[in-house]
Image 1 (cartoon, rainbow, N blue to C red):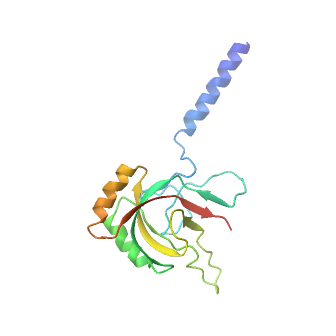
Image 2: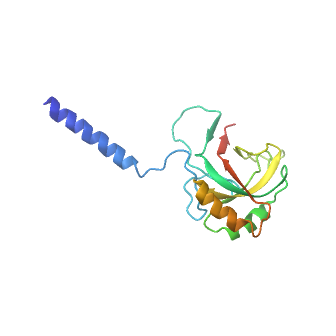
Image 3: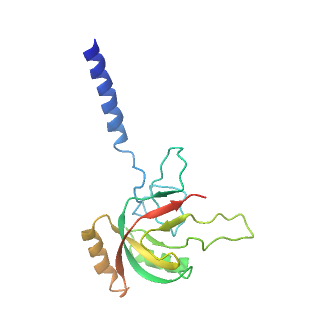
Length: 164
């Protein structure tokens, strides 16, 4: 009886793990703009899967990834039209830009973007393309970007949701 119960419990646990294997893990980056895996992100942000628990936290980070920084400049200086134009050059890879603390309209109930990124200067704007999870993938994207963006460089980073 105990053996049968143990086998039944193990089978249920195995089924639970197997059914959850297809579920996306928290922090997973949504790299393909045509196949979003997370909601609630602005067009200029690199989306990632957020946790579905009720744990209070100050921030939540994506998994680490490589990005090719196409261009950088003074804080809040990269316009959305520039990001959209770059996105057309990389149709299968999300192009994103740093707009943290740039888009708040004090006269409206516009909620500020809560996404920032690691490994970049806090007061610098950037335009980047998701380059992959590995350095090898990223180097290929960097090579293709350098034709149009001569100053392009590689960066390992994480997207960070800063909770209000």
